[in-house]
Picture 1 (cartoon, protein in one colour):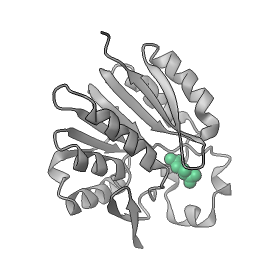
Picture 2 (cartoon, protein in one colour):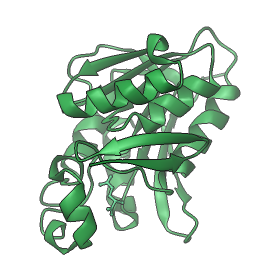
Picture 3 (tube, protein in one colour):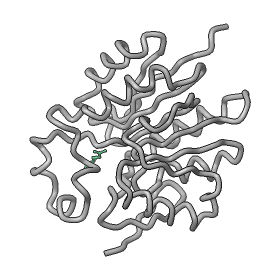
Picture 4 (tube, protein in one colour):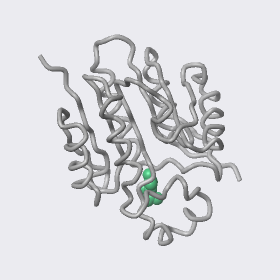
Length: 214
Ligand code: GLN
C-alpha cells in the first residue's frame, strides 16, 4: 500500500516501511531551518538520524542549497523510500543515504543533527491507534522500556560528533522533556538546552545547542 502525505512544503510517498510524517515534526524542521539560515560559516554539515521517509532531510536539503546532507536509518527499506522521495524533488545527489544504527557509521562532525527517533514506550506501543499499528513499522515507534533508548544513545553519540557552534534537535514525547534535559546536561554540559512547544502547547522539540564562544 502506497500513500501520500503532505509535510511542510513537500508531498511524500509513504508505505508500510516508514513512519508517516506527523505535523508536529514541522516544528523541528522550521526551527532547524531558522538556525541554519543564521549561520555564517562554511558549508553546513547536516544529518537526519532515523530519516524514515526522508522527510526532514528532504526539506532541509531543498531549502539549504549550500548544505551537505546525510540521512541515516537502520532500515534498508526506509532508505529506499527516502531515496524515492529525494529523487522526486531532485535532491538525491545532495543527500548521502547511509544504513546506520544512529550515527555509528558516521564520524562527523556535524553542525546540525536532527532526529525524530522512535520514542513510544514499549508498554504504550500496543495502545496506539489501530491504523498506526497496522500501517506503520514498530521499529519506527518503539523507544524501549522508557521510550528513550535511542534518544539517550544519540545524545551521547553527539558529544563528540556535534560541532561548535552546533545544534542537536530532537522530537520527543512531551512527558520525556525533563528526562531529556537531564540527559543533555550529562552528555553535553557545554550546551544550552531549551524546548519548543507544538500546536497543542506540548513540549515537543528539544534544542541542544553548542554556542560559539566569543
Ligand atoms: N508521535 C508519534 C505517535 O505518537 C510517535 C513518533 C515517534 O515515535 N517518533 O504515533
